[in-house]
Image 1 (cartoon, rainbow, N blue to C red):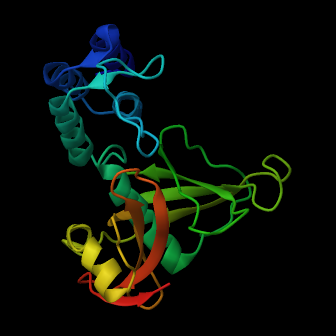
Image 2: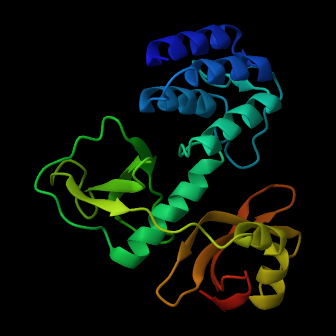
Length: 257
């Protein structure tokens, strides 16, 4: 259909600040009536983000009301419906965002930022994916990828860095081909074995703490993968350490640091 009709369905669903599974299904059905547009995909991705704000460590939601104006409370079934929609159409949102970040990182690790462009490309109909700052690196430039999911390509914008944003013009690169997907089961293996990798292999004592895989899994020039594990206290959730570790394609420990 049109972005307008999908937006109307979203507005109706958000009227009581609570999104049910049935309401999510209605929104998705409206979007899939005809050829799905990027505008419709963006509108549904925005709805998902409104209902899935990241909370600071240790904070809990105890009331079925949104924390910020314009946010919504998302029923678990609604999240499942929207994540299935994102996976079906390769939209970099919800649970699909990490997978897209990993494909972008894979491309950048192999090819760098890509071909410099003399002027900014038209990215209005592309999906924006904000790239996280590298662990432990200060004054790193802000990087945004604009993804064409149909062509399997993305443009990269780079701004700021050692100077304040806006002092230097934004630099553009691309189009770059998206990298390969991760080896099957790698993320699941790392999540399941986080504690043993950190304590047994890396030798970090997990006293009253646990280890959790964070950030994206990035391929490196040695054919392995760089990952980061967060060590946090059981009760306070305060972060004790963030440990960069190198693993192979099967999720086995290679080196720490």
